[in-house]
Image (cartoon, rainbow, N blue to C red; front, side):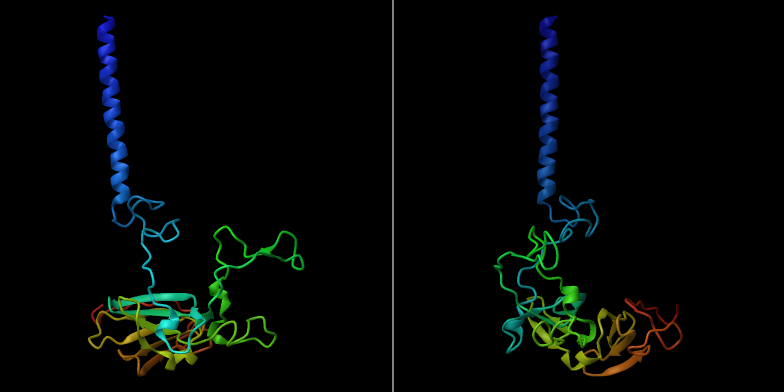
Length: 248
């Protein structure tokens, strides 16, 4: 009887060991998969979630540094990106809030008692040393009291719309339109348009503009730039747009 009990116990232990090994192997295999959302997303199958990059791998040096893309741009870098639209792998539109100066990689901690107790800069703990969204004022408009920073020193309202290829090379420069933007928020191409005109929505200047496919001509503007409203000729902070075909 005792021998039989020991045999049953041994079999149970062996089965448990097999199950445990199988589960561990499944976890390892899941971590190695490259399917978005599998293995490391906060919520499996969800794009984004609570992870820093979501279920995506950042592409190093995409886009290439601003100093490699444009002459006389040493010491400057890209600002906050507000939209990315890929017409195809070799024509990727990026809208951004101008340019920001490159910051040093090593900064000594400075305490700021004149502002308040227990305050220091950089904050540390992996927190970025600059909040790019507010580092450049919308429309590149500096305030008289200087609270928006110093144009040309703290920020530059240049190259708001740029286009890259798959290797991060800047292949188009739409800077001829820099002065019209407040904060471009969405780039689209109608799937029903054989000419593939480019539509850009500006949230802070309250308008939508249609451009030729090469960006050289501004074909149409909807809304009244700089004037918010809710009637037939105004928008109030538009952010996205969609298209319907003529038969809808």
